[in-house]
Length: 330
Ligand SMILES: C[S@@+](CC[C@H](N)C(=O)[O-])C[C@H]1O[C@@H](n2cnc3c(N)ncnc32)[C@H](O)[C@@H]1O
Image 1 (tube, rainbow, N blue to C red):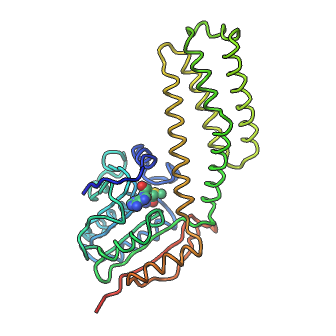
Image 2: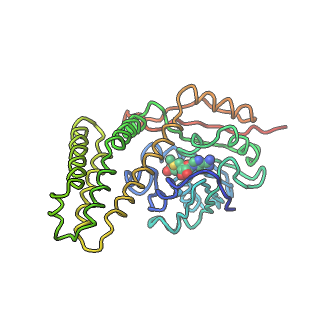
Image 3: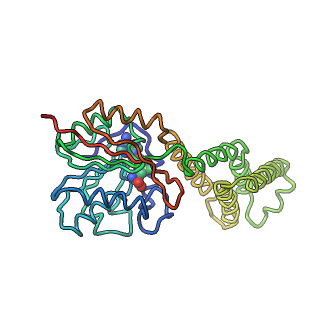
């Protein structure tokens, strides 16, 4: 069921290829925990035997895995389909949960708005940090097509007022400052000049005015970034950049090393990280957008419950819960 997609998904393809199970890298022990996990366990426990379950925007299958575990624990015989627009292959990439993942049918490069499943074939739909990333009107029309009468749907969406969104906004701001500082460009200039002389004669570059100018520019931008580190509550993106550049210079001293290629790799990783943060910022659901999503479901014949916010230890999670069910047409 692999489909071509015109969208550039490389920033997600790359992320999932590292084998993280959740979209918060290794912030969770094994899989989502606490209130979020409870929400999903309750939902999947309420599914009938042999239910067909569709998990959209699955990534490496964290939520589909909860369905698959409940199916095997309670002998429910669910068929779990898990789709993502990005290129995914969780059984090959994720080193843990191998049995649970093997029981799921993953569909890579499969957008929620055109999932390819037969009409009226799905009993339960799940999506965590997923629905809000998709073209809502087309996705909801597609869900109306594939859902069987009485199907139930549950989505956890990013809340626009959550700590996660605050952090994302700050990291995007710092990402822009990092780019404007020219830090990586100055690093590339100096590495290039250093690559023209043997490693044991790099000290001679002090007599090369062009190399000296690159070095001064690099030092100025590094000083600028270090002072930003001290002023932000979320310095990680800057700290990573400073560390990456120092890795490149350490690497450059090794004969035959490709320090410029290493720098290019770090830059690609940073760009992919920023592109995912942009997606997150565009996806986040405010009160108004939440009501618009509900209206779209209602227009397609779904019954909906009011939005609910998810708290854990009094902190607002990146969660906004939406429950819907496809009403039975007489
Ligand atoms: C934040 S991740 C969530 C992954 C997973 N559900 C979780 O909770 O860890 C968002 C995922 O949505 C996927 N996505 C974005 N647009 C999509 C679309 N139109 N159809 C299907 N998946 C999409 C992205 O590729 C990405 O893997």
